[in-house]
Length: 243
Image (cartoon, rainbow, N blue to C red; front, side, top):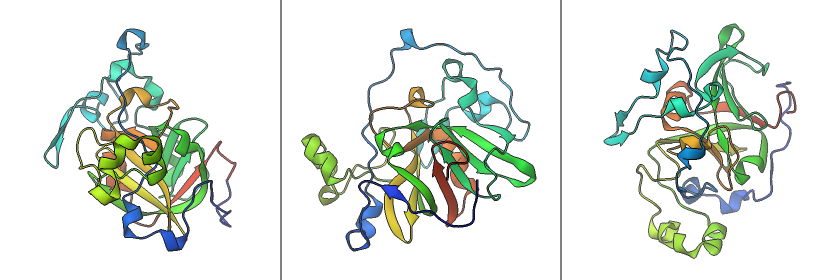
């Protein structure tokens, strides 16, 4: 994957600079929380309770945690495919250390490290997650963000009007679609409306659902949040080596 020139960002609903202000930072194409999975149909894949020593055990990584006054529940890792749990892998991206790479084709997010390694996280994707690709930066990040659905989403779902920017958005919390953390992606100082964010919907990791951006387990997005400073470069691609 070349890191020389920056190809144009593609997004069918990209706002122009004149339409993007501070209020748009709160906007997101990410959708509301859906009902949980049918656990009777969930394939149980039991991972070993061990991981790279730098992380500790999976049980510790995904245990219940209190954060900023919110009590996040433990992730039922026994019901997840182990490959989508946080782990250190050989870097397949060829990007510079410190770069975040989202491969939408594999449902993985990589944080490139020194020594040819990367931290790999599983992600879930929605329609918005496939509408944007290219190179940009993590311009801004927020703990326990508000969620404000864009007007086109409100037109489709009028019941969301109560969460509009006009009404102050949805307050942070366990049912907020942006979860415990949100990373806001900008290109040329314009908000792409593309987000990497947390989600309580652990069953959507590794899958494509009807709506949303790039969603991570809340415990994973909290870990990523602490590892990436502002202006971190991010590459979103469908297949390593495409961008």
